[in-house]
Amino acid sequence: MTCYGGCTNVNCERCRPKWMICPSCGNRAFMQLKKCITCGAELPEEAKEKARALWRERQEKSK
Ligand SMILES: [Zn+2]
Ligand SMILES: [Zn+2]
Image (cartoon, rainbow, N blue to C red):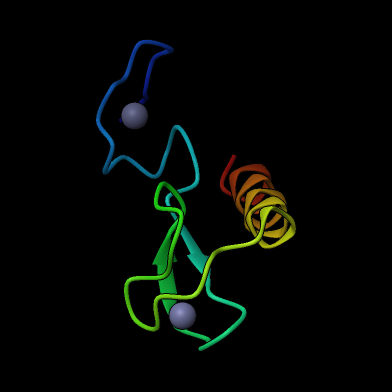
């Protein structure tokens, strides 16, 4: 169940964070998109950073 550096699966959450919380509507949004699929608001870079930090935290805990 280990992912290697060359993993190109965009749905793989083990290699990279995939979801973030949209600051405008509070729903889950794809980090890869510029805009939230639910409300259409632009996803600010700082919200993405926050999601990345949370993801790193989760990775640390699952070790
Ligand atoms: Zn992977
Ligand atoms: Zn939204």
